Structure formats: structure tokens, C-alpha cells
Length: 291
Length: 316
Image 1 (tube, rainbow over the protein chains, first blue to last red):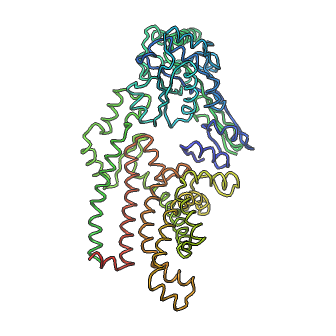
Image 2 (cartoon, rainbow over the protein chains, first blue to last red):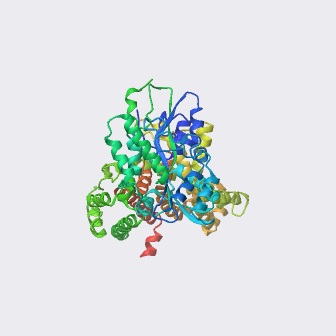
Image 3 (cartoon, each protein chain N blue to C red):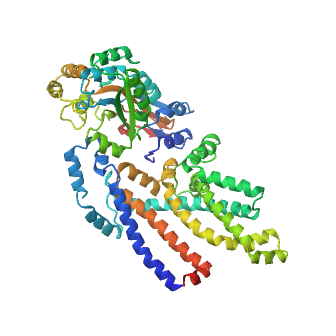
């Protein structure tokens, strides 16, 4: 077996379409249908542990106002993001960020899949936000799903009266100029949980002293819930604590859950007994063989 | 002649030093820090400091350069920031791949340029000239990655004649190696031929108006022999110099194409180095490309001097 890293998604798709590449667990969503419809190709798609979230900067007016953050969060059309940025290969996050397949799933329906523009407008009116308020959306140019979701988010923001500008830059500059110094109004990030434990989905994103807390939200109540959930003994107890934390985070809208991407694995019929992992890791290849 | 070669060799060394300095500074001043690119989401101020200290990035640039250059001349290009792999062996492994691609693309470019350029020059201001000049303009203005995409679509995905990419070492399977290199060579070579066709055409037009051509024509020589035996040989001298420069561009031009065709050469290493701000990788790969360009120019300069002794007399 030859294992290669193919950095260009189109080159990967071309290789799979022509039969030169026999296996990938990172099939680009845009080419998913074309690849799995190829004769002899086995598809193994499942909801993964890579979720995307929108980050409003708590230190930048008017995003320091919880009503504004909530208005933005409920205005977003997650169904359109799933369709436009992931070609249907993602699940909208309508409540907390822990996905449905995980035992820590909270079953909270806070958002409507298509968004709720009227409710969002009402919240903005309560927050005395003038129509035409300017806001900047910083995105990483080299991550295709983020570039695809940017105009959808921009359109949703425009529907509730914001004049949103998209600014893009490559990854190293983004880390240096946007992420590191928290120099943004709104940005988008993703987290791939390698452990698939509920804690791994929430602590990095929500804990006050986490390095990922570039939006600068601070909540002792939330931190206490997260710490308690780490040390709780039973699954039921932990599940309840994560539910409380996620419900609280939606009220304060620290970050805005968007979608959970699917692991898109496909392979030729020669590969037998391969079971994809939700983390996208390849550990299970040890149990597979080539015929 | 020997004096000229010595002068050329003596100017080569400072050129390499200046090029390495420019490269080193350019890589270090480009926006986006190596530490944050490597640490990504975990780039806390403490982690950044630790990373920079560990890799000597917190020292003055001059000291960093002197240390890097000192090791580089001994073939030690350091370790990759991203995966802690020694960069020198990696570059050495990839260099033949890139040279093969650039070499094959060069053959495509030169082949097209000599045949089409000579034809256009011979039929100056007539229909073939107009057609070939237009084709040359088209070739020169098409981005190579776009042409590559079209070629992949047509010859790989639609017709299924050639692979969409990948690389098989020629030591393993020569036929598979050549099949894999055909499309990238065409994509790279056709675009480069745009300029070379025009150079060849202009050069031949100039030669065709020379007195010795008139003399040859008056002797009743056929058009074919006139072009091949008399005009083309003389027209090749300026063409040779420009084509050598073009070879340098070809080596540099593989950056995107190697990625498009999944070829594990120096170009794809440069791209990864840029994306990750992996300075050791980027510097080593860029320095090797620079060296290839400088050595090629030096060799062609010497070759042109040998072919046309008038250049030596003019310099003296």
C-alpha cells in the first residue's frame, strides 16, 4: 500500500474518478456524488466530529451585546450552509455543538434550520442596532468550506440589516493577524474532536482560559459546569452537566454553532472490512485488507 | 576564452551569496509567522515563545542567516518545522523528479518553438506567420494550471488515455513514468513555448535578410536546405540564450503544476513550505531552484560564447 498526502482536493478527486487512487477518507464534498456513483466504488459516509462554529468577538461593539450575538445566530440559514458549502454532506447544529451520535448530545432545538430572520430583526431592534451597521467577516482563503459559507453568512447578515464585508487571507497570516490578536468582528473556525468524548467538543471552545477562547468570553458558571462534568462519575450525571453548559452557552451565545461535517470516505471494492471512524482517523485500516 | 570563463565563475559566487541573502530575508519578512503557522489553533503566547526559542527564531536575523548559510554550504538545510524531518535528504530525493519534469517540458517548449518559430519566420507576413503568431500569443497567455485542468479532463477523465497524476520512478517502470509525465510536460512546455516561438521567429527573420542567405539562394539551394543548413543554425544562437532563461522559469513554474498532478517534486515542497511557513523547507527548495537557474544561465553563457566566438572578441 502506498500512502500519500494529496494537498489539492481536485487532484485527489481526479485520481479517484480515474481509478488511480483507491481510497480516501477526505473526499471533497463537491465531488462526492461523482466519485461514489462510479462503478465499484464503496462509499462510507458518516457524521463526523468536525464541527464549524462562528465566532463573534465579545470585545467589539455591537457584538458585546448578547442580543446582537443571538440575532446573528438565529438569522443564519444552516440548511443553506449544508447545501452550499458541504453539498449536503453535513448536519446543521440546531442546539449545542455535541453531535447527535455522541452520548453527550443535549437534544436542544435552539435554531431553525432555515434561520429566523424576523426574530433576529426583533432582537436587533431591542438592541437599538441601526440598519446598515458595518461588520467584517474574516475567513481563511485556503479552507474551501469556509470560503463557500462566507457569502451565505454575508447574505443572512444583510437580511437582518448588517452591511457585512468578507475579508479573506491564507492560513499563516490568519493565525498571525486575526486569530492570535483576536483582531476580528466575526470569524469562523472548526474543531475536529480526536477523542469523541463530550468534553473534547466543548472545553476547548467554551472554557474561559482556553487558548481557543479568542472571542474573549468569560463565565465562571460555565467553567464550573465544565469542570464538574470532567470529574462526574456517571454518564447520566456528565450528560446532564454538558446539557446545562450547552444551554447556558446558547443563552449567552459565546460562539455560534453552525454545522457538523461528515467523514466522506470512499474506496474501491478491493478494500475489504474497512470501517470509517467518526474522527476521520485511520486506525481501523489495521483490520482491513486488499483483495 | 579561459579568462572569460574565470570571470564568469568568479561572479557566480557573489551572485549565489546575494541570492541566498535576498531569499532568506524575503522568507522571513513575509507576513504570517512560522511559529503560529506550526502551532495553529494552539498558538498561545507561551507556546509561540517556546517554539521560537526552540528553533532559534528569536535571535537577530543576521545571526540566523549566518548559521543557516554555514550549514547549507555543507548540505545541511536543517529540520522541517512541521514534521521534524531533515530537509536536505527530502530535497535531494525530490530534485530528480522536478528536473525530469522541467527537462521534458523544456523539450516540448523548444520543439514547438523551433518548428513553429522557423515556419513563421520563413513565411514572414504571410498566412502561416499570422496563424503561428496568434497561436504563440495564445500559448503565452494561458495559465499552465488551467491548461493542465483541461488536459486532465480531456485525456484522463474523458478519454482515459493518460493518468490524472501521480509519479512512478523510472527505475521502477519507465513506461508508467513517461505516461505520468506527458500531461504535466505539455501543460508546462506549451505555455513556455509562447515566448520562445516569437524569439525563434524574430531571430530567423533577421537571419533571412542577411547577405549570406541571398548568396545561398542565388546558388539555387532548396528552401528546406536553406532554412535547415544556413538560416536555422545562425538563428539558434540568440534563441539558445533566451531558452536557457526559460528553463529557469520552467523549474520555478513547477510549483503549482506538481500539486495539480500529484508529483512529489521540489515544487510541491515549495508550496507546502509557503502554506506552512516552514522556513527550512522553503529556503532549501527555493535555494535549489535558484541554483539550477544560475548554473543553467552560466552554462548557456559559456556555451553561447563557444558557439559564437564573435562574443568573445566583442567582450575583449
